Image 1 (cartoon, rainbow, N blue to C red):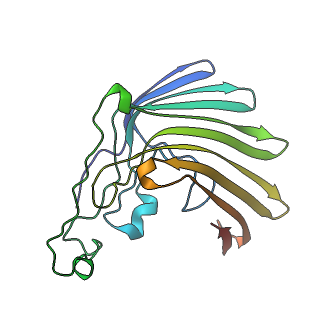
Image 2: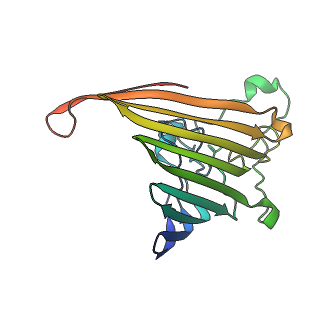
Length: 217
């Protein structure tokens, strides 16, 4: 029951260089559902059961350069876009009455970072193929797309990570990990990783088959 602009951008290409400017989806990572290296795509959590398929576009400038088997990609996000949270009357909103114990309590509304030069978000990634392995390394310096519970503020964070993927016989093997350094108010840094393997049985495009994916998160 909503209408909104998912993407609206302009592309410029010159040889091995191209740049995209405007509202766009920037999704990084090779794992499924959970991507430790994907921090540029806020989500629409108004229906958590569909949040995996509802990333939100961000206003950004994304340059790319192709150098042989490798590609450099950057992202500059001057305007912050946070994840969309369920409304207070939504069935997905948390029931606070059990925690308030009679006290007057209400979650603070999100307070987005102001649009200033100091609040801009930056990210960079190098990806390519080495001897049958798809590899990438990334860095992100920006804001948490989810507001902090109780204050409604978005805290700064920095992320360093990467991912790999290859084919071993009938299996596709993937791994992705990142070290996340949150704002000091959110606690110490931590490492998040995903290791997974997948395989298809039968003809998925024709008569039918089975796709199996297992991940350790």
